Length: 105
Image (cartoon, rainbow, N blue to C red; front, side, top):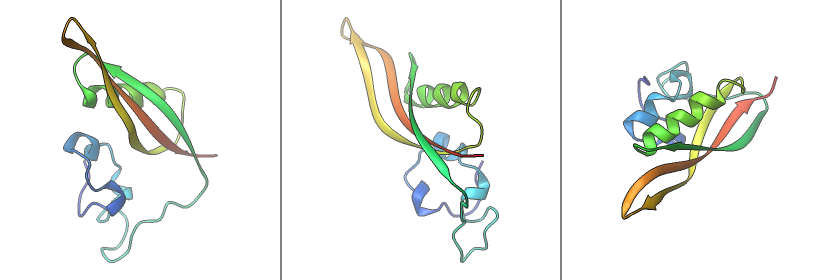
């Protein structure tokens, strides 16, 4: 769970998404209160899609958890798209496209 004031880049995240942001990337983590944290290094950004029959939060979590099995050093994500499938007048699937950044070794 994050602590302190959330940096502007993380503003607007719901509680579930905010809990996924490492404390070191928020003001109040490792950075002094008057200074934004710095992410030094080189990062690559990819897109992944998560799905869930129960909701967008679960689709996001499923995507990150599955990607973490083969991608090391993931540092952040952003939601690019949200959509769903409808069958018989009912929502049957929630889909989330995420852009994920990870540090190159």
